[in-house]
Image (cartoon, rainbow, N blue to C red; front, side, top):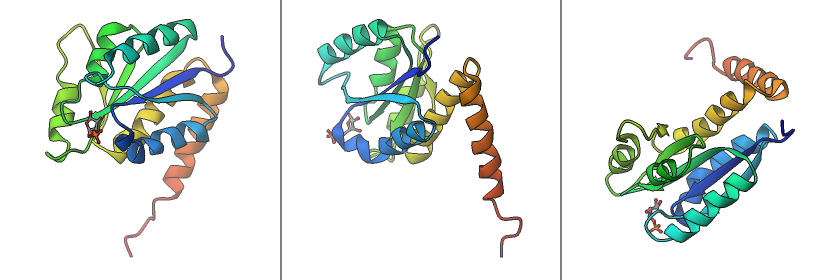
Length: 160
Ligand code: RP5
């Protein structure tokens, strides 16, 4: 088993980075290798194909795919690989409802695990990846437990 499991983070546009940086930063805080790229299902389909060949070669464990609007990136990626795909809908002119529905409404047989729209989804996609990897990597499991313990401590007991 690899000491450093590989997670790939792809997004439909450079403009998605402002949100997806939160995903990348969260993965980095767990010291998880993260290959981050701009790949669009519509604008760069050949790039997507080549990227998936690379993922196969380097044993990528999880792909996080973010896109806005007609957000087909996660679904098309899931159709082309059996690596688990987590989808992050990016806020759009329709407030991300379009991105959410495009990402979540997959036909049975080609699953995409869809997170929330925007920053919360970006962070949770990383934490979900961490949780998947934790089952095979005790060091990651320990870090996740610490993260959750600290997370709880940050919530005030009173609202005033
Ligand atoms: C999608 O269209 C991208 O994922 C992005 O969220 C949205 C807008 O892209 P740009 O026009 O900013 O490149 O494909």
